[in-house]
Figure 1 (cartoon, protein in one colour):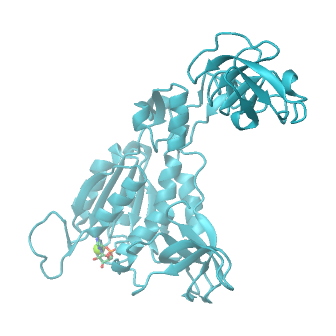
Figure 2: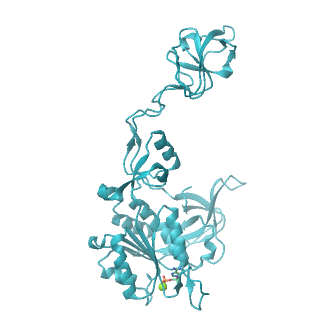
Figure 3: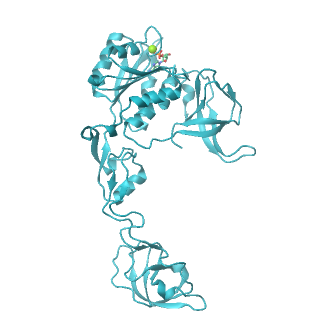
Length: 425
Ligand code: AMP
Ligand code: MG
């Protein structure tokens, strides 16, 4: 059995990210309005400088520093107001010694001016101002052309996952069509003779249960920007399973199933993958929950698809997905600076570990200010209810997993520990 870290490393070694493949097959262009969350496939640069022109950072008066550098209450400097420059208007004249222009935040600086005096710092009259104090320096409150970005420099790097602020930057640079890596093609199915699709309106017969894994896994994929191909429920029948897997592999980057990877008489997935010539990276991992986990890569002639066979127990399926599948999908997508989801925190309640396996306890993390003896930081509270891997009910609102290394028998309340955050904090 592999440790979690060994399994993660082996999975990584199977992945060939979209960024390392033929760009003709991996890059598409989308309008900016659809680019949120997509992975930028090419570095972007702009012909524009930022700011585009010298402008004022304050409402006030544009001045020549030489005129007012010695100003004081004892020796106020009088300047004639020669122009008024609202934002968006081009100055009509050049500032001469003894002159000032009324100016506003974002207005273009007139030629000749080099400093802004905020309106709070002057006595304003109809045709002149009195400056009672020297500006703190030449260039005060001026935003210089190119101060943030020089035209032609790299603006955004390839491989970043486009955020809301990135979209603002691209818009400001007039980038309307954005090169991104294509979305991953991910197939999802469940296997088990006891499973019934949610869509089936009949009351549940004895021995049957709803295929909740497919619903939860589909939603989890959606939350990371992937719309999976739903392949439904496949019975515990080696022939049907083999046909389903073989038929869909060539069209997919990744195929994910839940159920049928344990050592039971009806667990066929590994045998089928073996028959298809798969290279196995993982067959079981020393973690709890989620010990049975199959990760394999199909041969190139079958599409080189990555296969993730998750355990069927609802908690195991989701924990395995969060811990092993999600980081793999993110690496495959071409995303370069992958998010680090581990933080150090404290546990509010005692936690029980395991001698042989790394334990992932599901619960909620919240940041707390200092409270008496308790330091400020991330505090983890395990979910209540049974710790059974079949107990999906107490997964409600879970946002973090506490990670207890193998051999860690128990942790006292208040002890520091490693947390795996499901959303990046
Ligand atoms: P398996 O991994 O196939 O041995 O299944 C382990 C447990 O998970 C069994 O109790 C199954 O009934 C349950 N299970 C398997 N697949 C699903 C599913 N798609 N949705 C909900 N429970 C499932
Ligand atoms: Mg089963």
